[in-house]
Image (cartoon, rainbow, N blue to C red):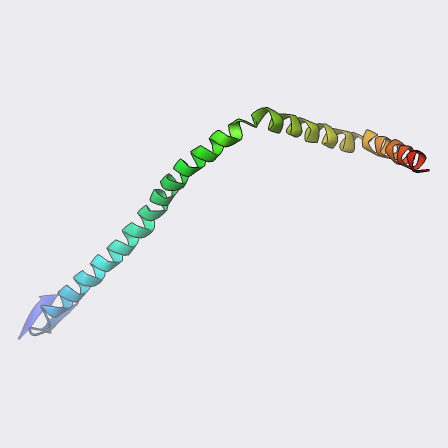
Length: 100
């Protein structure tokens, strides 16, 4: 005797076993899929709460960071346009004069 299954005709003794194994495997795969999809979002949310505290601490130093960033931009512009080399040469001359 055979019973119609997903793969066609199968012996009636195995008909109940095959769908159950596929169901368990499908449930395990679905669980792994859901964890893989959802867990990164949960971890990101937890990390975001911690990051808010760090950003609050950094906010106190906001003006200092802006000034340092402005100095870096100015140095970059001097480097690209050429006056940086002239300034560097003058500072070397001044350092040699001070030393001796």
